[in-house]
Length: 284
Image (tube, rainbow, N blue to C red; front, side, top):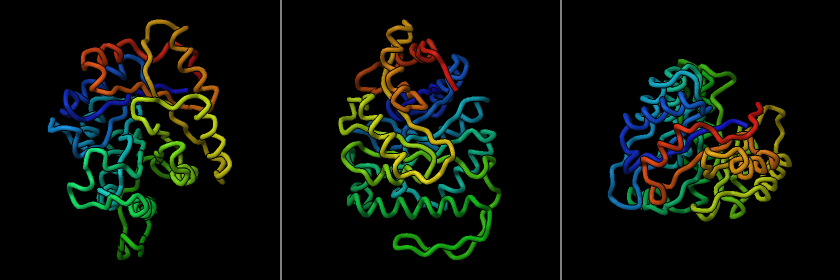
C-alpha cells in the first residue's frame, strides 16, 4: 500500500503557494503522493484556487511523490484543453501525474451556476466521450472524433506524455448508489470510491465488494489501483493499523489521508502531514 495526502483547494488551502509548500512538506515527511480536489466553487464564498495552476506549483516544488487532482468532472472541462494541461504537467513533473476523473455533482451549484447540465446521464456521456478524446490526443497520433457532445477534426497533439503507454487514469464513483462509474473504472487504471455521505469513509466490507465488482468487469491484466481514504492520528502503529490494515486486506492499494476543512483546522492537518504516513507495515 502507498500513502498520500488529499486536500481541498479552497479556504485556507486556496493558494497555490500554500499547496506547494504542503506538498513539499509531505514529500519530506515520507508520503508517496499529494492529491488535491478540483472545484470551481465552495459551499460558501471563500477563496478557491485553480487545481492545474496549483499542480504546476506542486510539480516544481517536489521531486518524488505522485500528484494529481481527485477528481476532475470532465463535463466542465474541454477534453482537448485538459489534454494539453495534463501532458504539460506530466512533463513538468517528470512523469508523476495521475489524472482523476468523475461525473461530479451540483452539491455546491458548480454546474447549474454556469449552465452545465445537472443531468447525471448527460454528464456521464460527456465523461465517456471526454476520456476517449483524452486518450486519443495523448497518443500523439492522428486523431479525429465525432460524438454527441464532442466533435474533433483530424489533428495531432505533441508532445506525448512522459508516461507510457499513457498517463494513469483513476475514475471516481459513489458506492453503492450507481454501478456504471465502477464499470467505467474497470476500463482504466484505478478507482476512487466515494461514500454517499461525504463525512463517512468507505469501509472494508464496501471496499471488498467494490474490488470484486471491478475484477468482474476488468478485461486487462495491467496493474489497477483501489483507493481508500480517511483519517489516522500518526501516533500509534496499533491505532493506525486498526484503520488502514483492514482496507489493505480488502484490496486498497493507496491510503489517502483526507481532510474536511469544516471539521479540522488547517494547522492541525499540517501537523498530521508532518507526522508522516500511517504507522503500518508498508508493502509495495
